[in-house]
Structures are given as C-alpha cells and as structure tokens.
Length: 143
Image (tube, rainbow, N blue to C red; front, top):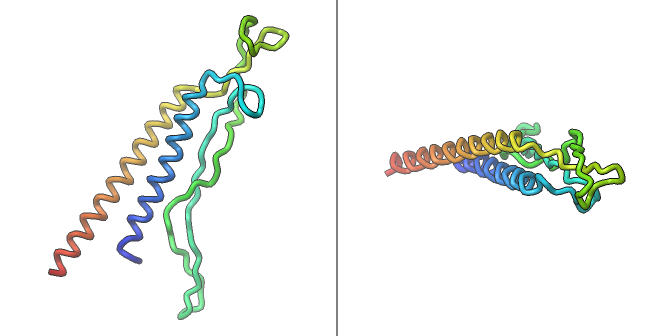
C-alpha cells in the first residue's frame, strides 16, 4: 500500500459527498417546481455510492488482488415516493379537477441529508489531515 492510498480514499469520499451535496441543493431549489423537463412535477433525486475496487493480477502469486480506491457514485436516481396533490384551481398547472402535482421533496429529509453530508465531509477532511500529519512525521524520522 502506498503512502498516498489513504489520501486517495479520502479524496474520493470528498468528491462523492460534493455530488451528494449538489443533488440535495438541487432538490431544495426545486421544492416548488410543478413543471419538469419530463413533464409533471419535479421528482426528488437521491445519490447512491459504491465501493471503488480495482482488481489486479499479482504475477508472483498468480492470484487476483483487490485494491481499494475509496468510493464512487453508483448512480443518481429519482425517489419513487408519491407526488403530493394539492387543491388550487387558480394555479396555472392545475388539472381539470383543480389539483396541482407538487414535488415529493420534503425539506426535513433534505436538511437531515445535509447534516449527514456535512459530517461525512468533516470526517474525510479529518482523516486527510491525520494522513498528512503521519506523512510529515515519517519524513521527520528520515532526517
């Protein structure tokens, strides 16, 4: 394992959490969007992560080894929770019965997700700082 492997893992976590933060921000920005490109109300987006493992063949042992490279974004998918219907016949997007389809974005869920992203980001930064300190101590030993 290289000295930079832990930093690479922390960096992948920071990048993944940044995309998750962008997705949550987009959800909050569209909390009242009754129109979307696909038609209908905006649907909440959710990010899933996967482990980023690279399999390599060790020529000495002739066996495959897994090299952990952190996390990667699996996919960004739409939340399938039900769309909210509200009665507002004066709204331009109301159907013939006067109901408007509103996004399935709940601000409380988004705020909880924001706190989780913040904690994960903070943990990755802390791990990266500890890794940097360990590398500096190793260099001091070499003097």
